[in-house]
Image (cartoon, rainbow, N blue to C red; front, side, top):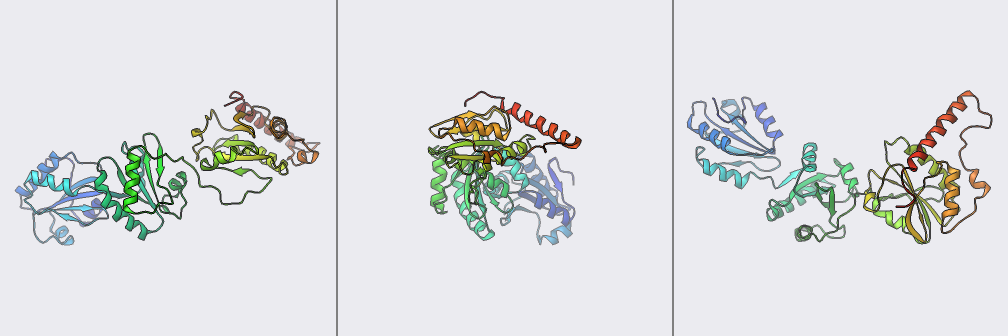
Length: 396
């Protein structure tokens, strides 16, 4: 059968038909008798006239064996298969173009989609805000899906709705700062990369979700920062305090303490070396109660919401009585950094001999040839870090 519509698939086997249904959010398949001419022609005209969308697929089946597999007892018949939703059968004349269009317009929209890898790519380029509901278990996901399906028609063309299993999308959930055991609703606005989290203390009812979405559309919801979840481990003096976007201002804003903040990210070659240096500084100052040594991953935390980051790695110092960020641009060694913070702090302190004794030596006093090479490599690396730290002015 020769159909004029270039975007229609002829499905000759049951396996082909099942695969076709599986790869499309909405599949519209016309089941026709091999001798039928009028029905397929009308269906083909309908396909040619529709604009369609990326989630829809159109297929034609004339094989009796495929008819039997799908329990099609009479033809012609046009069936809409919707992922994770009941099928819908067209009851009118398959040659009636206007009725077919109305049928698709009424039934063809997927109100709430399940997240997968392809959908994640689609979401990232969406111009329309996306409502993501992260669920921890399937039963809760089904309950929320029904709730969102009832709610979605109120927000047609202004919001898209998706469900996502936290187990399958932990990395995405963590970027939003979500706990992997909680059910949470997030509105994402891809063009700006902003997201808005429904407060955890608000119960998940259809009325509360509606109110939150309306408040968002009215621009009355404060955006949430991209942030890792706060660390659960108790901070131990002598170690670097790991901070995240959601706790950063609390850490550096402590008016009783001077704060040294390391900003790094995975994949930057200088960061492991600087992190090792800052670990030594934290260890050396474990008894200085007026000082915090902290670290933040700028790749997973939206630090630019607070101040500019001209490069990484970056060391910033915040005095207790003046929280203007001072960038450290001196020599990248534990001793020099310790000397800088001990004299620059609001609460100055003396460097005790036992502090510097904590530093890891680069080499022994009488290095052999391999140790000399190691020393040169480490000194070059430290110089490279220092040059990076020099890449900006004294204040931010």
